[in-house]
Image (cartoon, rainbow, N blue to C red; front, side, top):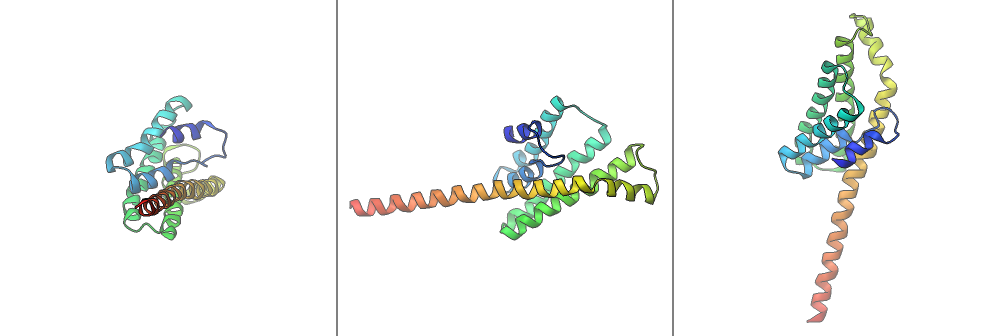
Length: 168
């Protein structure tokens, strides 16, 4: 959680953040309650310092991360590299659709027509690209680091077993 909060304060491209990756990773490897609360709590704490914004849009942002966390239960049962990458893309798409629809509905920035909705989504495409790149980076980093640590521990364990056999 400290990492997620700190990442929001470090210089980064807009929407290039670890929250969705933490939501997916947390559900796969942490207790259920903690996993669903962790990304939301990280957002809330960092928003406290960064600043809160229009509450309906903020609710859409938090809800999208909760949905990503819930999707993590699907991923947990099918934990393969291609499902993990697919989930990173899906998380970005869910975030993009929910948050931009909320911006269109709850702010005066776009006309409340199909043309206004289309304009809202088009204007958000650069942020969508950053969201996808951030998700891919952080999902790969978190899941990859976890697998490397598991591999390292297994290698260590094998070495210790061989050493114990040799000492007999």
